[in-house]
Image 1 (spheres, rainbow, N blue to C red):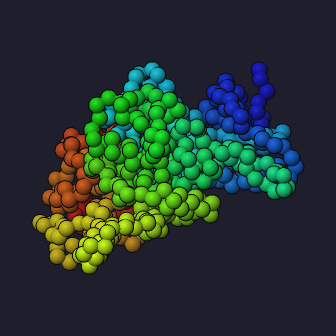
Image 2 (cartoon, rainbow, N blue to C red):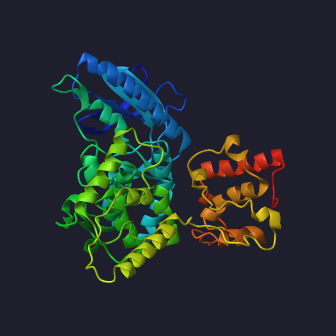
Image 3 (cartoon, rainbow, N blue to C red):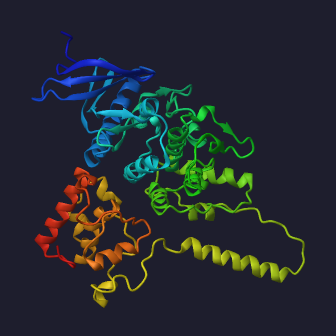
Amino acid sequence: MQMLLNNRYQIIRTLGSGGFGDTFLAEDTQMPSQRRCVIKQLKLIENKPQIYQLVQERFGREAAILEELGGLSEQIPTLYAYFYLEEKFYLVQEWVEGDTLSTVVLQQGLFNENRVKEILISILPVLEFVHSKRIVHRDIKPDNIILRHDGKPVLIDFGAVRETMATVVNSQGSLTRSIVIGTPGYMPSEQAAGRAVYSSDLYSLGLTIVYLLSGKSPQILETDSQTGEIIWEPEVGNISSSFKAIINKAIAYHPRERYSTALEMLEDLQLGATPLPATLPFQNKTNSTVVSTILADKANQNLPDQQVTKYQEDKASKKTPIVFPIVFPSVILAGVIGLFAIGNFWLLKPINTISQPQIQSNIEPDAESSLPTKVDYFWLSWRRATDADLEPMDGLSLDIMRNSVFARHGRRFNNKGLQEYFDKQSWYNPKYSPEEFPSSKLSDLERRNVEYIAEYQDRTNKKFFGK
C-alpha cells in the first residue's frame, strides 16, 4: 500500500504534470465516505529561503480566496484544505466529475451555436462573480472548463496560485515573478505583457468559443497583419451574424474594443442583439496604445472595483481630430458639436430602463416608482442570498427578485402583473407555462435562494403579489 500524503490522502493516479508541479486524483481516508478529491502539488521555480517565506504567506492568501470562491459558487471547485510538505505546496479541491470542453470536442465533435450559447449563459455569471472579487482567472481555455455530468460548466485552475510559485529574485535583489501565467494563443497581448485585466478573461473565453465551433486552437488561426485581429469566421459553420458580432467583440485585439464586463456580454447574448462598436471606425494608433497602457496600469494597481468602462475609456482616449478644409467652418463646428452631444447622450443613457406604466393591472400608482430600473439578479445563480441583500428591498422588489430566477430559465407566470413586468425585460425569453416548467432547470443554489427569499418574505411580511 502506498504511503498516505500528509497522513491522510491516498493517491489513486496522476491527472497531469507541468512546470509548476503535478495534479493527482486521491481519496480522503479521514472522511467516512472516503470522498475523492483533486490534489495540486506546486513547487517553486526558484527555491531560496527569502522566497519560500514570502510565497508561503502569499499561498495562504490565495488559498483563502479559492475557499471563498468555491464556497459561494457551485461552478467553482470547493477548496477542502491546503498544506506545506517538504518545501512543496498542496491544494486539496473538490473532484468535479465530467469532461473538459476539449475532451468533449474530441469525443463528440464540434458544438453548434445553441449549445455554445447555453454554456456561455451558464459560465458568464460565474465570471462576473469572480471579477467582482477583483480576481482575473488568467487561464481560461477548453482544458480549464469542465462540463459536469449535470450539464453545468465548471471553471477550474485559477492562475493566481501558479503565478505565486513563479516568484524569483532578480539581478537587483528584488523579488519579482519570472513567468506570465496563461496559455499562448488564448491570452491577449496585454496579459502576455504581464498586465491582465478583466476583459483578458473575456478574450480567452471568446477564443474558447471559437475552438468549440471550429475545433481549431488559436495558434493555427490566421491573424490580420494590420489590425492584429484573429481571422476565425471562415473556420466555423453557419452561425448567426449577431453571434459572430458578439464573438468578435469579445476577442478584439485592444482591451477598449472588448466587452468591459461579463455581464455586458451576457446581456447581448440573451438579447440576441448585434453589439455596437466601442469606438468610431477612425483610430489613431498612438492613442490606442495610450488607452491600453491606462488599462494595464490599472491592472498593476491590484485591480479596481470596476474595470474601466467603455465610456470612461473613450473619455480617456483623446483622439486626434480629423482636419477638414476651412470651408463653412461654423456649419462644420455645429455639426461636430451636435454629433458629440448625441453620442454622449447615447453613451450615458441607462440600459434596459423600464417604461411607464410598468405593470398596468396589478400595481398601484405609488408602487410603480419603487420598481427597479434594471433587473440584475444574475448573482442569485452563483452565490447565496443573505438578509443583508434583502433588508433594503420592499415587497414588490422581493417578488420580482425571487421570480427572476424562474424567468431567467424561460418560465411564464399566471400572475398578470409579473408576466407583464418580465415581458418588458429585453433578456426574457418565455418557453414554459408554470405547469410545464421543469424544476430540473434550477440549480441547487438557485432553488435554495428562491426558498430563502420566500421564507424571508413570510418572516417579514414583505409581499406584493402574494405567493
